[in-house]
Every structure is written in C-alpha cells, then in structure tokens.
Image (cartoon, rainbow, N blue to C red; front, side, top):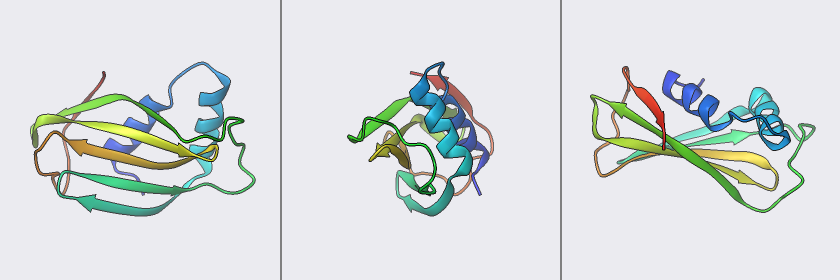
Length: 113
C-alpha cells in the first residue's frame, strides 16, 4: 500500500495532458508494489505492471522528475524521480539532500521544481 506522500507524488509526476502520461496513469492504476526499500537518505519503491497493460511506444529508459517535498521531518527538503523501463513504470526513488529519511512522514507540502 502506498503512503500518502507516495500517492501524492505519483499523482503530480503523472499529471499532464498527453498520450504518454495517460498510458503511465493507466499502468499506475493497475500496478502493484513489488518491494519498498529504505535507504539512509531515501527509498526505492518498485512496481509490477501486468503484461497486458498498455506500454509506451518508446522503450528506452526514461525518468520523470520535477516534484519536491517540504516536511518538518526533513530539514533540507526531498526530491523524487520516477523511472520507466521498457515502456512501463519501474520504480519511484525518493531522496533527501543529505538528511536521514524519517520512518514516517506525516506532514508534507509538495511543490513542482
């Protein structure tokens, strides 16, 4: 299950009025979480997308970024990158700029970078 932060980050990253973002939103809607890995300064959230989900025509590795978060628990903010591999969402990376990643983030404000 996604945390509130993860869900809102994905919503912002997948915003857009184009065919590629629509395909990625469809993938996200049917994706399951394969694994969540916490690091000292962030996390990796790996997705599994069913084989019958639509795929992007461009199969090269891509990233979508441009979302940050402010939280009292992370003094120097955080950033997020969504990785797309072989035409499907692969994993979301969240990271701080040197601060430890908290066990739980209750309050946050997202912004576009």
